[in-house]
Amino acid sequence: MTIRQAMVLAAGLGTRMRPITNTIPKPLVKIAGKPMIDYALDALAEAGVEQAVVNVHHHADQMEAHLRTYRGLEILISDERDALMNNGGGLVKGLTLLGRDPVFIMNADLFWIGEKPGHPTNLERLAGFYDEQRMDMAMLCVELERTTGHNGKNDFSMADDGRLTRYRDAQHNGVVYAGAFVMNPSLLDDAPDNAFNINIYFDKGIAKGRLYGTMLEGHWLTVGTPEAIGEAEETIRTFRAFA
Image 1: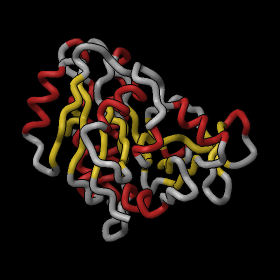
Image 2 (image 1 turned 60 degrees about the vertical axis):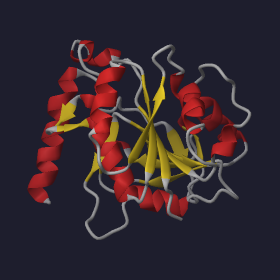
Image 3 (image 1 turned 45 degrees about the horizontal axis):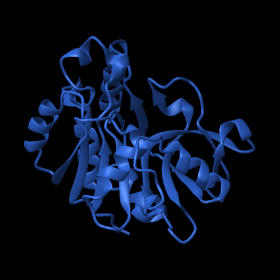
């Protein structure tokens, strides 16, 4: 399956990244010379996505100006200047700008490096793994030891077939959610109209045995504080040196 549409969640305040985010939105903070959101957009374009919604709130004018210059795919803006909708409410609002086919959902401040040239990308493999007959959502996941900047805690346990449960209910290998998943927009047809956290639907999927994950290839990075920028850039330099 080739997925042609996506939404990138980019409206957060980036409070832990202050004082940098006092003057710039977190997705535009550069890591190794590249705005964080461009890592996500480039990954989507490489996987065959043609159209992506990006939601904006904090320093929204800067976000819109940057996104107008991006040429890899068509970008639509979901404007949350009036009120932040949290990740769930923002997703519901943004998806109204897209069609009803399966869609990638990505965070603007989480990305990965180290995919093998000539192999399917992580997002291409995620799209191929997703089976809407069996799954509410298919997540990209990563082992804790292949992360930089994370809090040191696993999010889910993964069974041999990829089925996920919360790590506190661990019976299988622990994994970290890597900030990308696939779903059918119809999954949120019963969602509230106001702000809510998408974790509600992760837990609904777990309760029905319909939340699945597949493992990321390479190394995953999250940059949550100013101090974490240097650590992320050192990881990228190391990977490039051995590429």
